[in-house]
Length: 369
Image (tube, rainbow, N blue to C red; front, side):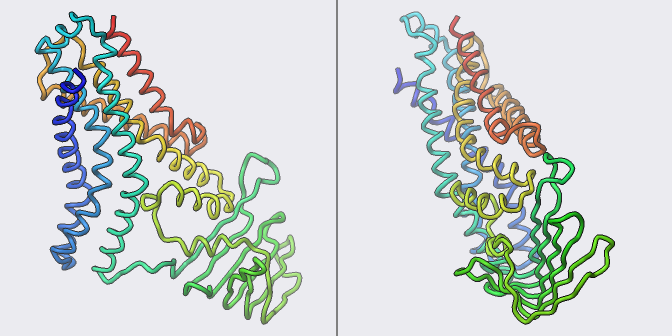
């Protein structure tokens, strides 16, 4: 029985991966590549390379949706052909009949996690680098201009609120030295100090910034300058986060969990911006939660499919699309709630999965009666 149901699940699953991946990559990448070929002179060979590199991103998004489609179509077909009635007449419970779908869901969950960690981020980064090189706008291994870093601290009148502590700006960066720097210090009440310098480098041995050819302006509470100090070289105790920020050029979709966590700890947390911290915490937790959507869809699809009914494949496909849209809409709302602080990052990432598993188990219990 397990082998038979597994064979029946395989073809709809592969069909779903092909269908959903094709739709996703057509909307998300293919049309843009065609535009680059026609307008920017991108060669066909490079366009094909980038297309192949973008495939994993959309294939991994298709895995959960294909799991739902496969379980719903397979069990609906078994139900409409009275094969489920025959199995139950032999004493096989609904839970036992659904077991192959759960095993498939767990397998696809592991496959999704592997893609998200080992394949998709590296492929996305390589696709971006290849496209930028082809368009003569290759991304350097660091941010070259307009490095802006904002450091926050608890507000003096409300510890739960945030206010600006320090503003760091550098006009240009060559990978080692920053040029045209301006630092505004708000650590005390109001603007207390302004530092302007021609250049600055990070001293890895002393963990300080070395500023060169600059001026320090001490600002009075009334806005006037108390004194002005010019210097040839001055060491300042400022976090190295601007250097880390300028040195990192990967987007969050080009990072695995380890890279995203390192970015959170070395850059985002030191900035002190609570909303940005919550956003990154939520994104990292979503990298853990996303693969388990396969379990949710496997349970829901199998539980709906085993109900006594006569449903066509087209109807199963349409119902799958409705469930997928509803689930991801709810996930988007939870993500937004997490970013504004209404939900904790854990709840924002895991609540759709937890509720989905609950709904799936409830539907399975109802079908077993």
